[in-house]
Length: 120
Image (cartoon, rainbow, N blue to C red; front, side):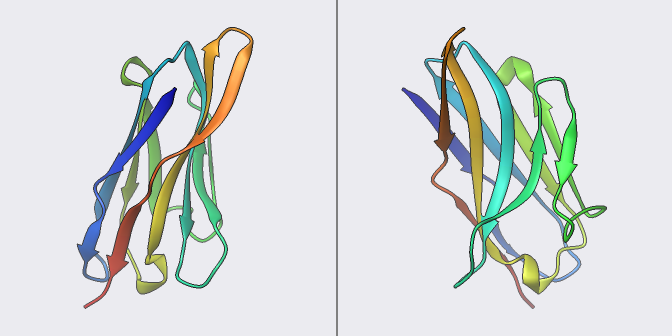
């Protein structure tokens, strides 16, 4: 079994910054793609940013230029540096990963989420 544990959420004022962390642990052979999603209250979950094992990144339109995703493959961990936060960034942020338990056994996992609230 694989666990994804997010941390780093909290309350921040508009214009502030936060860094989220997601660590994968358990029966891991390799981790292919790791992503951050978010779900604002009453809305659908949306992709925030993704990163491959090779370091290729992609971002949602609403966060491009303000958020930066990075990865430490040795720790199976990703980070989301969030700058210039605005109230519409308020959401539960979830980590998602495609994990190989062996060379041919891949599954998709979700973390439990961490709340980010942007408010003065």
